[in-house]
Length: 76
Image (cartoon, rainbow, N blue to C red):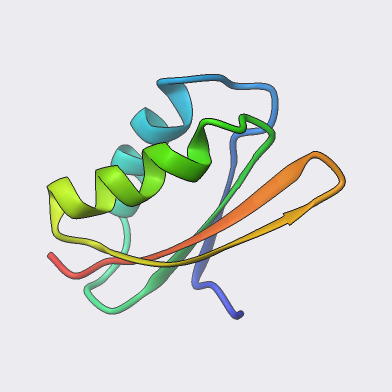
C-alpha cells in the first residue's frame, strides 16, 4: 500500500505511537494515508480504537519480523 507520509515509532511504547500519530496526521490533507511503523504489539488494538474515536479510517495492518505497519486514512 502506498502511503503519503511515514511515521517511524520503533522503540516507542504505549501511548507514544498513538500520540505521535495524532500529531503527524494533522500535517496530512483529507484523504491522504499515513503509514505508522511500530514494534509495539499494542498498536494492533490501539490504532483501530483510535481511528474509531477520531473518525479516521483504519485501512490495514501488516505484521512481519517483530514490526507492524499500520495504514490510516485521514478523514477529518
